[in-house]
Amino acid sequence: MLQFDERTTRLLEEAYLGADFSRRRRASFDALNPSPGDVIADIGCGNGLLTLELSRTLGDRGKVIGIDPSDDMRGAAVNRCAGHANVEILSGTVTDLPLDTASADKAVSLQVFEYLDDLPGAVAEIKRILKPGGRLVVGDMHWDTITWFSDAPNRMKTMLDTWDGHLVERCVPAILPPILREAGYRVDGVRAVPFTSTSLHPDGLANMMIHLMKPYAVAKGPFSNEEADAWAEEQVRLAGAGRFFFSITHFVITATLPG
Image 1: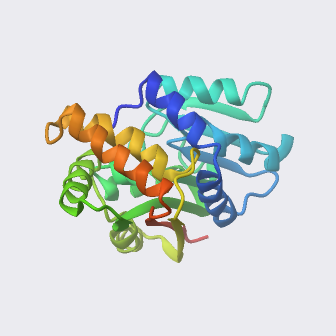
Image 2 (image 1 turned 45 degrees about the vertical axis):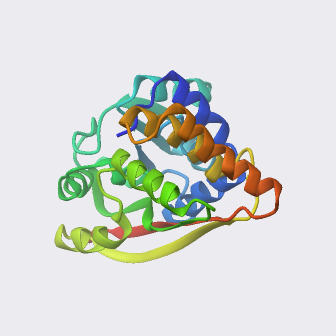
């Protein structure tokens, strides 16, 4: 699993302001359908971008509670949301939320569930803090959908297989809906949000992944520094030659508790 230290937090800060990540946040925002007066739990709030966007639409009548286990991420979220009285940032995890029972109208969790080893426990804990009729929105990648072109396909496969090690569950969108139903939620929809790029944008998802995957593969052992550099440099060359191709699909799952 990735450790979101100060360096990683800075990298994510830049990438999360880009077009790819803005579109992903917007998909969760729209599925959540926030209304003035709502109390919303942003579970795994990271650096607070979605937290801030929600706070603006809720106004003084509502509240956003950002929850994250990382000190660095919470610090970034506190700085970003400074001056917004309707935001509170707390330490906690998905299976141990620092909220009272039936205290939130809605909850959102963006790219968090793939790191969890207890999905039933997570949805049960979120159910505890939601009010009757409350809504849950979960956004995660389905990593079986990734396609990434390379002239060295075996090397690319090794890199992607290694990257799987930072996840606990790579197929959250496929396995979560039945877990939600078993826990008593009504699954309202599963929406696909595809990301496809034929250019290597500095603020894009693919570029962020290159910067995260290269040191991860070296740390885990399959790649030397030189081999990882060669993998990354090939993608830059392919982009320069107009041959870059990257695609993956993000999914937004929406569920509601009985009223």
